[in-house]
Length: 447
Image 1 (cartoon, helix red, strand yellow):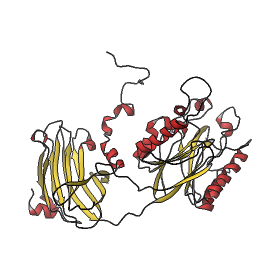
Image 2: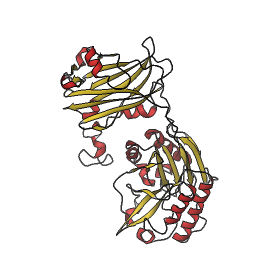
Image 3: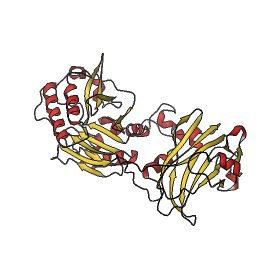
Image 4: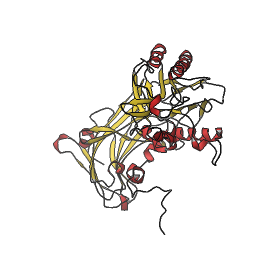
């Protein structure tokens, strides 16, 4: 336990602390703890005991009263940890009057304040909870030290649900012999989507040129912004609707397969240049992009992938890692949802659904897939559910979603929070190319 003076110094904001005490699992892996109140600021110190399994630290105890919604934050500075932020631990536990755990939430890094990392989490008090304890400390580092300061537990207002109607418009042009005709066809599909009240609609891949003959991609590429993009911007503004689709984009001497995101005001909100090209695309002169940007659409974080990106699991993970809540996917097809042998393509609807559902669930995002030709286009939830799908007769479809609908896991917190908490990025070096240059298809481990 710490002195009343240290307790007072650490309770300057929000709900006051009732107690601060050590928490440990077993002596062999217990860190060294102390506190420092010199200079007028109190800090809770945690130092590794030299064990690779070092795990433990301080426990902050609150009695928050009857309010339901709270925000907790705390600052931590650290040095010489084995795996940097991966070795920092912060978790919140709700307890009933007997001390039994009712719920649990990880506390995540939310930004920097000078040299300190700000750890933060919105918390919801479950029925019957009388006490909140927050455990802060070190995990799995045989070296390093950390100093925790400025804990704050603040009452918060109930969150306002962020509702949006996500939709797809993926009809195939019966005839389209020019970019002009394709532009007219798909802007008319946008009109139908707008009349249906869709808030954010996704159209398929390279919609202005997918069905046109050409010797290379430059022959069918368009300027962005430009005259073939403006009709879509006008539709977006007319209906107050976001629009996403992919085009062959001219970029000086380069051509990219580029997904565009047009905002409700008709302005070009963002663009994403396809990173993972299909094998035929570079042969036709297409150049890939090299990053996965995300964009703020009406307070919702949106990312984009295009077709073959879906085959590389990192594509969806990259935008989700940056906070994307909705992933828009213009796509012609997926080679995994086809025959696994030589011969003419044979679309496998069940495998297609499996791929989309798993992409959405693995990354805890709403996935909006718009497939050229329509069949399989749909909206898929972070729980892996098919909210709506085109079985061949629904060229315009939609689902009303609340992007804050994060379902509870059986063991506490939400599935999204649990899965991001369990990730340990510092040990994923091979995924980022930090290994001898070979691929698993060309190399086996030597005996």
